[in-house]
Length: 186
Image 1 (cartoon, one colour):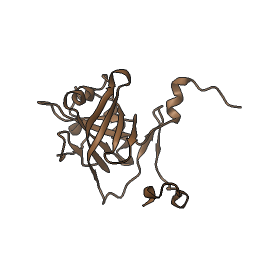
Image 2 (cartoon, one colour; image 1 turned 90 degrees about the vertical axis):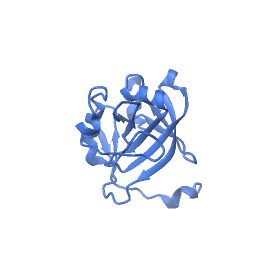
Image 3 (cartoon, one colour; image 1 turned 120 degrees about the horizontal axis):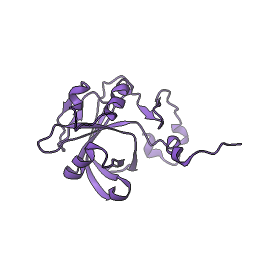
């Protein structure tokens, strides 16, 4: 027997990936960082496309609309508390890089900065914004990608939708079973 699940809680079981940070910058404004849990891979080829749900309630929304650029940064578990705190305040009120002791690093192809403390950083440009007015969904094209090969901590956090998080830990290696998709196990 199963219990009925409120429709408002469905998203808690369909978590799309790790919690990420998104950096933006507008003319004459300091760089901003927001926390984002709602994103998905939309194309895993070249170019990579990532769907990002960012709404007008987010300070970063205006910057992405104006510039068409952002950086998606992937933090690891040691930044979990800062990631949550970043999501609980507005860049309209504070300098989040300064307030949370994070280091902005110049990107190569976009104006928003990378986050030095993150495992990976993806420089992005808006590829498609036709779903923004209806669903707050930007399709971002990754135009440059960076990873810190020396970072020992590689576990990321996943939001469960209720203020709790899951931490990546054990790796389950099923490469031998991926017979239909050999290009993914190289």
